[in-house]
Amino acid sequence: MSTYMEKKGSVERKWYVVDAAGKPLGKTAVIVADLLRGKGKVTYTPHADCGDNVIVINAGKAVLTGNKMEQKLYRHHSGWVGGLKETKYRILMQEKPELAMRVAVKGMLPRNIVSKDSLKRLHVYAADVHPHEAQKPELVK
Image (tube, rainbow, N blue to C red):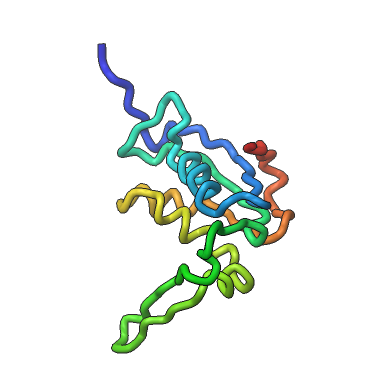
C-alpha cells in the first residue's frame, strides 16, 4: 500500500470567506493560514501547495487583546543604514488593517516557497464587501 501525495496540478481549490469582525487578529490568522495550506483536506501534503483561496472581510474590525494596540510594533527595514521604521498597531489598524492581517497570516505559514504561493491566494479587505462574488465563496464560522 502506498501513500497518496497530492500534485500541484491536480488540486481542486475552493473559495472561503472569513469574517474578522470582533474576533482576535491572531485567532483569525490561524484559521486563514490553515485554509491556505489545505490542512483540513484529506489530501493534505506538506510539501505541495494544496490549499484554497481565502477572502478575509472586516479586517479593520479585528481586535487585539491586552495592551497590544499600544505596545506591539510593526517593524520593517528599507535596507539602508538607519532605515528601520516602527509603527504601533493602533496606527496600523487605523491606516492599513489589510497589512496587519497579511503580516499575521504570513507569520503563521512555513518559511518556504509553498507559503509564497499560498499568500497569492489571500485576499484581505477592510470593509465587508469584496469583488469575488462570482466565485461563490463559502462562509467560514
